[in-house]
Image 1 (cartoon, rainbow, N blue to C red):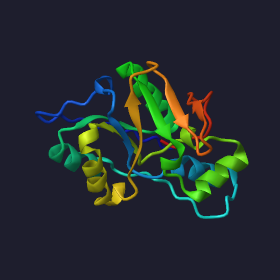
Image 2: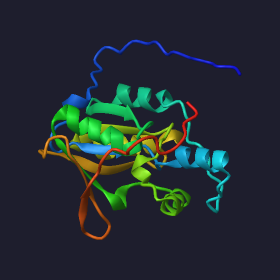
Image 3: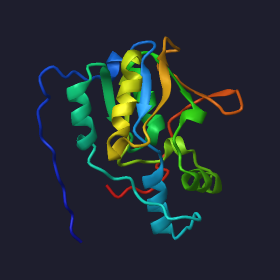
Length: 198
């Protein structure tokens, strides 16, 4: 077969400083759109499983979204793409690096019905499903609404949402406030849940 490898090389613009260790209590956590599309689309194709609707991978060049945001807003503290391990893995890494807690709201999570139903059918958690065109941003609370509005003005962020906030602690922990009024700890997935193609 043919194996193609690519490497991206670039420089950090002057004045831009992003670090997952810089998250502060009260900061907002944002995603740029629905999670889980890529992983479920790949499973559907590889395993021949139909989930009742056409699933399409969310692969996208996120620089088309991030570069304009970074040039416009100073309150963006961290950005990560939610690939392997999905949203859960990224949030846990952010919480660990910043030595803060993160609380997300289940009702605020953008998840397509087809992805939600597919995960329910297969016993997966949408938080653990791989993405290829989704990012997680930690931003200052004062700029959160304007950053989401700016994201929604871009095709790659049309369904952006604030999904949670940074809390004082417990350090390294991520909590999900459920639709039923309870809460649960968000943990990393065990092993490779879904096949990757990149």
